[in-house]
Image (cartoon, rainbow, N blue to C red):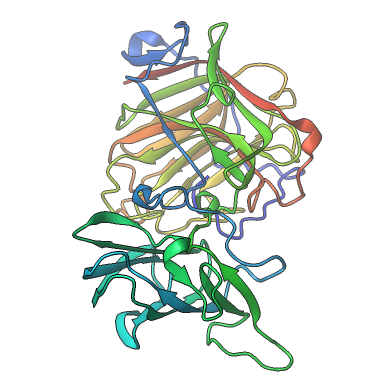
Length: 423
């Protein structure tokens, strides 16, 4: 579920059986020690054992308030564009000011024709600063240039001085050359700030500059994850994760992504669950590294015990992602599938057995996937570190939304009867 860029997979008629799809030996609890469990028999979620991923996957800069997730003008491209904003700032105090810009990709800032921030390179969301002395109630020309490469976009403009802490530059302190509150932005459909008769710039007055568009958790997913009871709760001894069609902070859907505060290396992991149905849903029970020892995704690995996209009813996918191979794993030895026709109608037990030299994923008593440590280094086997468990329902995304979204299926829920960890 993490960073599946351009993952369009259709497995509805294809079963992949890695090392066979056979019955495994019946589990004997005497061979294992139960080290952690949640039977969801409390009236509410145990926050000692669980926490949440929240939002759209975009960076969060609380000192600037809530960023808008809608950046570009309607009909404008979301990638490979550039913008130039011009206008004036009028400070309230005489002081040395620090201008702060958070940018995902290239940015430059001039104050009174002095270039004080210059970082014209593709980059992850980065906060940059530059200084300029200003006098109270005097107009200072300001220009910002920005280019977006691809993925999410972030552009936040703030300032601070000895009189106040870091904050957005408000609309009553920024003005266009013709007196409107804010800055005049010229949006170019290229990265070079160029326009022509065939490709004129789009002009918009922006009262404040405060955007952080969702990366959709690396997959262009459309939901906003919350910890609200509407999206995640305990009901009748079951953990309920529920996605809703709901406008919330710039997103059209809400859902939840809950994860264990505990983490483990090796063991048997059992999850008894009923999966959500409906085109546009993308449910997962999976694991991520806790310390990211080998680097950011996919270097430190990912274990997908269950993935199910609603348009491919009953097709259970299991896989692992590594530095050696990540993203689209179709027809590789790192993914397999099994049809479980009633996976969205009744409970099944999904099992990961994780050893030092191999992993086995099963549904009930059937093995669907096995992956071995071939002693090729961490690039092939980063699975010698602690991992934690995640459960979520995404909406849309590169895979889950590749055949559109049926809004009539919401609310869509995943129910988990229990999770048990043995070692």
